Length: 329
Image (tube, rainbow, N blue to C red; front, top):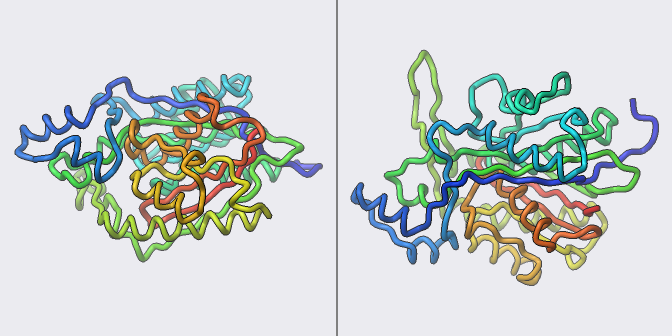
């Protein structure tokens, strides 16, 4: 196993969004057929969301995840056969089992490497990235594929205006590779299970029937209050762990839930707006996919460059939260 000190670096990234784009006006018109009143102005003022990508009925999380994975592997200059660990973060798996990670492994045409899912809802990618980093540091993987993927449209109550306008579908992925120089500098994960009811999808299948409420339910005000509090503390703690100041952070990539949360967080951390990556306006909230999607956008448009210090944060149901501080290569 490991003989020398080893670190992990983000060697590549990729993303995939379903081709169907639904604007606020289109969604409002569709909801109006159900006597649900909303508008582009109402949605933008409260969330910053202008559109979302929605998967067609029957499209699975593993399909979106595989598309993002292929792009990340190519971006890293690798072949699928080079991957020796797959970790998928999702709250909308294809099946109860096998894991979505195993399905992605099959779609990629590789066998043998470890593959498993992580379930931490909107914090899932940060949890998965931290898990994969531990594998690489321990010498148990050299090229880990870390994916956040969701088809949240499957679990939305389209009669609930307070939630159905907020979410979209998509997938983002990174390849985390072993390196002699540090890439992932620090990571911290947290949870508070006493807060389960403020954001949950509490239904399940038992004895061949749906038991409980199968739809996503959220106490928006409670989530907002918790999110800004824990994300600020987590950002400061992970920078302290790495021995760097917040001022040194080049890009802040929080979970893309609501533009109000993002802007409030940036102000609390005294980070200028130019350092905040925002994709919620065009992607909506894609849960575990939101951070890797935003990272890939920033890498492709040149905002995230080699040498940059990037702070990625997740917060979501559970209640879960966490941060990863990475130096890009």
